[in-house]
Image 1 (tube, chains in turn blue, green, yellow, brown):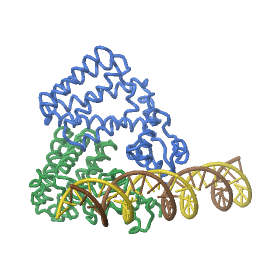
Image 2 (image 1 turned 180 degrees about the horizontal axis):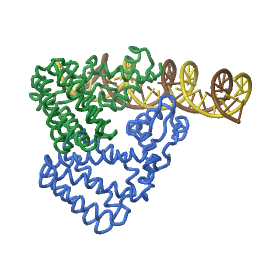
Image 3 (image 1 turned 90 degrees about the vertical axis):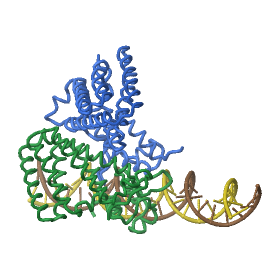
Image 4 (image 1 turned 180 degrees about the vertical axis):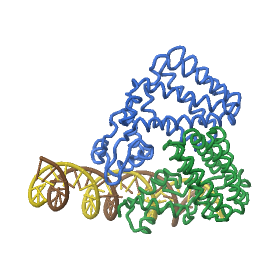
Length: 228
Length: 228
DNA sequence: AGAACAAAAATTGCATACAATCCACGCATT
DNA sequence: AATGCGTGGATTGTATGCAATTTTTGTTCT
């Protein structure tokens, strides 16, 4: 038990929410959660406050906590923010990645090509995370990296089923090609543009996956569920 | 007392830290703070956790909270992150500001020119915040705006005395000119570049203000104090 | 004298008790 | 019948007590 109970609880709750055990808008009763996880209300409260800072839940003073209802508009903003953050990291990576980092980036990208060809969606998804994380790190700025990973985590519920789309890994790989090539040749503007393009296509693919539910309900601002 | 005690405490502590009442590295004793503010340890704990998420303090499990010691390297990263965030907002503003927003931006910029000429450093500093906030808003992305304001807040202790530098408002105004002009003419790349340039110069001006303490101690990673 | 170990003191984390606020339901009034 | 108000229940916010862990201090041995 190296960590504190509140920390573990926050992790467990985050996973539960992402997994969809608690639907958006669900009220999170402190006493109930305390019983369910076998602790007192104090660490539950601390975990809730912590989750609130990640945007997963909202706590209104004296009115309890609820799982965040994310409207299509907010989702769009999140995707755009992630695109801009990743594009910025890609630009900085093009400028300041070390030779070693560039070699590793190339190696991972090549391996992802094999995975895409082999049709290994799960493996590709895992490696995809590593690739993006590598680009965050290559920017050599922990503040930006932290923001990017946080935003990525926040979008995770909506990107989960992404790579089950037929042919998505192959297309992703092709888009990565432009990003990686630009970074490797030190083309800052090119890396920025290519990454922006890539994430935009990922978002488009997401809307396609939803059966365009997001687009159709755009005007009504109906909150969305995560993909299960 | 509409708000909760923890909320008020967090605000009070943040102001105290920014004002320099608690120097970086200072240990924040829960009991001590509880007595000092006339509440129990519980809201103190909650306030500390909340401040930790803003980066103002650090809480190590079972080892208490300390005011964050920010090294020159971290400060550099914060400045760069802010520059990139603001540049991104400027780029998006160039693309998507409404005519009304553009008019208001122009008006504020003009007014700041008068303030700079009049030598009203305090007024200029206040309007400066409004200008940057306006550009965050013009990006029409609350996620990015939130990140930018948070980073700006976090750098506040180090930018406080900025505009007392002789001639800084005039130079700032000239740099803003390029940013505002690019936004108004819808020049995305130009707005991005101009804003990046501006914030970089602000950072340079900060280092000058420190008597180059930051630059000189770069190799030793000695934490910095805020500007009082 | 300095280092290593042990016990005590202090501080944080968690549990429980109490107080304040919000919400729902019911009743009275218009 | 609908709206406003009041009371009771439920839920969150705060205080305090206890357990666990860290830090300090004192002692002893090299």
